[in-house]
Image (cartoon, rainbow, N blue to C red; front, side):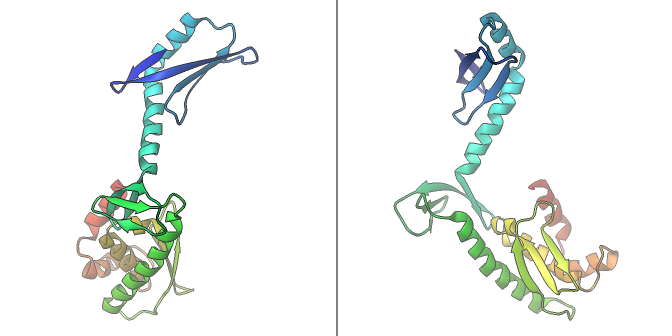
Length: 213
């Protein structure tokens, strides 16, 4: 049995079990639709159930498809590449593709790149910052709700590792934002005026970052 969704046909696998009391609909990584039900469930009931839940099934398929597409993509400094696996010990960039070995640790490589690039950009923005502030210690980690954090007491700036996937203009804005907190530990008008000296288009960047979270 097949079901047509998104102008494509997807296999429907019906699993009847005597120990199953309820009926479940699932979409697995193979993009097949699995119906698990009681052994004595009538085929007419299953067909009707599928028809009534096509929208729900379409949503489940869409989630799986997007997840698979994302797994084959790699974002770095504002550009997204298709991943091509080769017998290589290193990573190579093409115009739209990156070439790596299957066992190449991309997450570890990204972290090393972030440590290098974030430090370079912090040095650059600190040198041109219009106010005298202590030079902050840099920490990098993944964060789910914030792009950066400033700890004035510890003289520390923490940046979200995910920034390595974005264009440098967003990284520089976040760095300036956190450095400005050493002068204004709030989001007052004076704070934003200070940010605007180095990042006049900060409102545009903030909006774009929120839209692409």
